[in-house]
Image 1 (cartoon, rainbow, N blue to C red):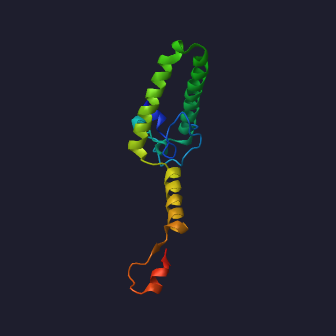
Image 2 (tube, rainbow, N blue to C red; image 1 turned 90 degrees about the vertical axis):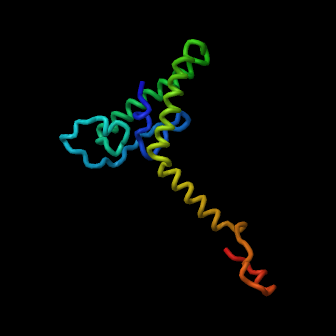
Image 3 (cartoon, rainbow, N blue to C red; image 1 turned 135 degrees about the vertical axis):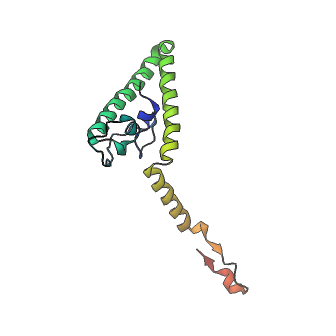
Length: 144
Protein backbone atom coordinates (compact mmCIF):
# COMPACT_ATOMS: atom_id res chain seq x y z
CA UNK A 1 0.00 0.00 0.00
CA UNK A 2 1.40 3.42 -0.90
CA UNK A 3 2.30 5.90 1.76
CA UNK A 4 0.79 9.37 2.01
CA UNK A 5 3.98 10.90 0.56
CA UNK A 6 3.69 8.76 -2.58
CA UNK A 7 0.01 9.57 -3.11
CA UNK A 8 0.58 13.31 -2.65
CA UNK A 9 3.63 13.55 -4.93
CA UNK A 10 2.07 15.67 -7.71
CA UNK A 11 2.13 19.46 -7.12
CA UNK A 12 -0.73 20.24 -9.52
CA UNK A 13 -3.26 17.55 -8.55
CA UNK A 14 -4.61 17.06 -5.06
CA UNK A 15 -5.15 13.35 -4.42
CA UNK A 16 -8.76 12.21 -4.37
CA UNK A 17 -10.74 9.09 -5.14
CA UNK A 18 -13.46 11.27 -6.68
CA UNK A 19 -11.10 12.84 -9.24
CA UNK A 20 -8.76 10.95 -11.46
CA UNK A 21 -5.24 10.35 -10.32
CA UNK A 22 -2.51 12.47 -11.91
CA UNK A 23 -1.27 10.95 -15.14
CA UNK A 24 0.67 13.90 -16.52
CA UNK A 25 4.31 14.42 -15.68
CA UNK A 26 5.83 17.65 -14.44
CA UNK A 27 9.13 19.05 -15.60
CA UNK A 28 11.78 17.59 -13.31
CA UNK A 29 14.42 19.73 -11.72
CA UNK A 30 18.06 18.86 -12.16
CA UNK A 31 18.84 15.54 -10.49
CA UNK A 32 22.54 14.76 -10.25
CA UNK A 33 23.56 11.20 -11.11
CA UNK A 34 25.26 10.87 -7.74
CA UNK A 35 22.02 11.61 -5.85
CA UNK A 36 21.01 8.17 -4.64
CA UNK A 37 18.98 9.46 -1.71
CA UNK A 38 15.43 8.43 -2.59
CA UNK A 39 13.94 10.24 0.39
CA UNK A 40 14.60 13.59 -1.33
CA UNK A 41 12.58 12.44 -4.36
CA UNK A 42 10.01 10.38 -2.51
CA UNK A 43 7.02 12.72 -2.39
CA UNK A 44 7.83 15.43 -4.91
CA UNK A 45 7.32 14.95 -8.64
CA UNK A 46 9.69 17.79 -9.50
CA UNK A 47 12.51 15.84 -7.85
CA UNK A 48 11.72 12.69 -9.85
CA UNK A 49 12.85 11.86 -13.34
CA UNK A 50 10.22 11.35 -16.03
CA UNK A 51 10.77 7.57 -15.76
CA UNK A 52 10.20 7.68 -12.01
CA UNK A 53 7.06 9.77 -12.47
CA UNK A 54 5.73 7.25 -15.01
CA UNK A 55 6.39 4.41 -12.58
CA UNK A 56 4.69 6.35 -9.80
CA UNK A 57 1.65 7.08 -11.99
CA UNK A 58 1.39 3.41 -13.00
CA UNK A 59 1.66 2.20 -9.41
CA UNK A 60 -0.95 4.67 -8.21
CA UNK A 61 -3.30 3.86 -11.09
CA UNK A 62 -3.20 0.24 -9.92
CA UNK A 63 -3.94 1.39 -6.38
CA UNK A 64 -6.87 3.56 -7.53
CA UNK A 65 -8.12 0.61 -9.59
CA UNK A 66 -7.96 -1.62 -6.52
CA UNK A 67 -10.10 0.88 -4.62
CA UNK A 68 -12.70 0.94 -7.41
CA UNK A 69 -12.76 -2.86 -7.59
CA UNK A 70 -13.13 -3.22 -3.83
CA UNK A 71 -16.07 -0.82 -3.89
CA UNK A 72 -17.72 -2.86 -6.65
CA UNK A 73 -17.18 -6.06 -4.71
CA UNK A 74 -18.41 -4.43 -1.51
CA UNK A 75 -21.79 -3.97 -3.17
CA UNK A 76 -22.25 -7.75 -3.04
CA UNK A 77 -20.47 -8.63 0.22
CA UNK A 78 -19.38 -5.49 2.03
CA UNK A 79 -18.33 -7.12 5.32
CA UNK A 80 -15.41 -8.80 3.62
CA UNK A 81 -13.98 -5.65 2.05
CA UNK A 82 -14.79 -2.86 4.52
CA UNK A 83 -11.51 -3.07 6.44
CA UNK A 84 -9.36 -2.70 3.32
CA UNK A 85 -11.53 0.09 1.93
CA UNK A 86 -11.27 1.89 5.29
CA UNK A 87 -7.45 1.58 5.26
CA UNK A 88 -7.31 2.98 1.73
CA UNK A 89 -9.62 5.87 2.62
CA UNK A 90 -7.49 6.64 5.70
CA UNK A 91 -4.38 6.66 3.51
CA UNK A 92 -6.13 9.04 1.10
CA UNK A 93 -7.20 11.38 3.92
CA UNK A 94 -3.62 11.45 5.23
CA UNK A 95 -2.31 12.04 1.70
CA UNK A 96 -4.69 14.96 1.21
CA UNK A 97 -3.51 16.52 4.47
CA UNK A 98 0.10 15.93 3.42
CA UNK A 99 -0.60 17.50 0.00
CA UNK A 100 -2.16 20.54 1.69
CA UNK A 101 0.94 20.91 3.84
CA UNK A 102 3.30 20.57 0.85
CA UNK A 103 1.52 22.38 -1.95
CA UNK A 104 -1.38 24.34 -0.38
CA UNK A 105 -3.27 24.80 -3.67
CA UNK A 106 -2.89 23.28 -7.09
CA UNK A 107 -2.23 25.41 -10.14
CA UNK A 108 -5.74 24.65 -11.34
CA UNK A 109 -7.25 25.83 -8.05
CA UNK A 110 -5.19 29.05 -8.17
CA UNK A 111 -6.31 29.74 -11.75
CA UNK A 112 -9.96 29.06 -10.85
CA UNK A 113 -9.76 31.43 -7.88
CA UNK A 114 -8.13 34.10 -10.05
CA UNK A 115 -10.84 33.80 -12.68
CA UNK A 116 -13.56 33.95 -10.04
CA UNK A 117 -11.98 37.08 -8.57
CA UNK A 118 -11.84 38.72 -12.02
CA UNK A 119 -15.46 37.74 -12.69
CA UNK A 120 -16.53 39.27 -9.37
CA UNK A 121 -14.68 42.51 -10.12
CA UNK A 122 -16.16 42.78 -13.61
CA UNK A 123 -19.68 41.83 -12.58
CA UNK A 124 -22.26 44.64 -13.01
CA UNK A 125 -23.78 43.84 -9.63
CA UNK A 126 -20.51 44.82 -7.95
CA UNK A 127 -20.70 48.45 -9.04
CA UNK A 128 -21.12 50.90 -6.19
CA UNK A 129 -21.85 54.59 -5.75
CA UNK A 130 -19.05 57.08 -5.58
CA UNK A 131 -18.53 58.25 -2.01
CA UNK A 132 -16.28 61.26 -2.60
CA UNK A 133 -18.89 63.53 -4.23
CA UNK A 134 -21.44 65.95 -2.75
CA UNK A 135 -23.66 66.83 -5.71
CA UNK A 136 -26.70 64.77 -6.75
CA UNK A 137 -25.53 64.24 -10.31
CA UNK A 138 -22.33 62.56 -9.09
CA UNK A 139 -24.39 60.29 -6.83
CA UNK A 140 -26.13 58.91 -9.89
CA UNK A 141 -22.87 57.83 -11.45
CA UNK A 142 -21.64 54.38 -10.65
CA UNK A 143 -18.06 53.43 -10.01
CA UNK A 144 -16.58 50.08 -11.01
